[in-house]
Image (cartoon, rainbow over all chains, first blue to last red):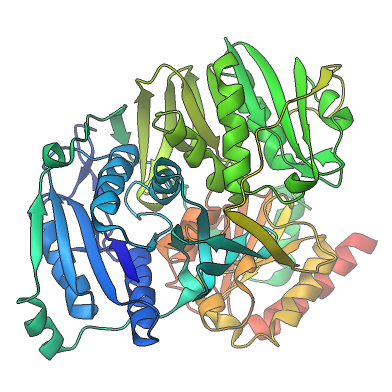
Length: 249
Length: 313
């Protein structure tokens, strides 16, 4: 069974981003970029499925600028078998990415797409659901437990009330949540080996997909900061202030 | 112009998050209709919500725990009559709405915190570290809205008409297996007026009992930082933060939480924030209205006692 793992190159989660002075966006020049952490978890899960003999081949795919090749090499170093970059310097929004991925799925015919539940840059939480819709496949989102057997996936989903378990028929799209696993670090020998693994580059036009953005991010600003508060000296003083000053008791 | 809001029910009543979505929908301009889904549901409670024109009821056995496939198919069927499809960004809304949006070839705007016009919205990006103004160029719009950013609509006072809807054929691609609901006597985290949260500083799951006692006095929900969840102190549904739940209570008490960016993203819109931490350099103090530096194992029992005393006096 082939597993497709879409991965996104994003600003590293430890970087404190800065909004550009002209409010045109976030300054990502010269900041550390990494694989979206949720996608790392998806990649790890695909590798575990392969180690368990369930998956036979793992294909990592990314959409974005040429430097996204680095992110794909990371996936290859973790254990993916080959990679595809859908190269574009245009702004790619979730619906466009879902269409690009759907085109790749039609070529590659995987039984499972495993991807992060959201990217930590635009925080949209859409692409997996959209891909499932475009393919007419079932979806299991926010997955933190997973078993794949007998042509179906049984997934424990992180929902607001607790954990919901659903069974979806394969082929399916699964989006993963934090607690599914702890991703491995790539070893140096594997990083070296990854450089020799196949990485194909295609263009959105080759896939026949119109990626023109439908949403315009017309302004990006700093959120209003909270004003610094006061330190209180004792529990008594705290309760007093909450009662009289803040009025929340 | 008209708006369809997917309203989730909570024990028969419209859930608070959905009431907030109804408020947001009202700001888009036009009539507001509700869609309720379930097995054995009726639209009576939804019909009483102020400002609602019509309630559409999808009542069928297979909708007891509606799958994304069935819910999205229903929305697509209803979409021609509406300019906007709206849901709260709950786990249900986040699961269903993008699927419906893609089927309709619409780019969704997720987790809207402010409605500036029918096609213009504000939403956070980068875990709340930047605030974007987004314009949708699609002919119709699909939105999820952040419930804590809008006041809930009044649950009483309306008199909407209630009518059943024809349902598309059920999908057999996905089936419900079960649900483990976290049992708690406490208010729900995202709708509680007061939240008491613990971090890695709590040291163990056992020590969260201290927070339970404090929460009991305050009538509060108990939350946790991702660090406390990762350390295995409490289950993930306690998690407040960018990767957990977004809360904005009247009072948020952060105990032994250093204040990582991703945690702040989940609670910084709280009205009043109290930080209790032994490390006076903890970033949490920079967003807290009231900070108390010291040993939480001494301070929390003291605070619980003091609040009991303040209550009875």
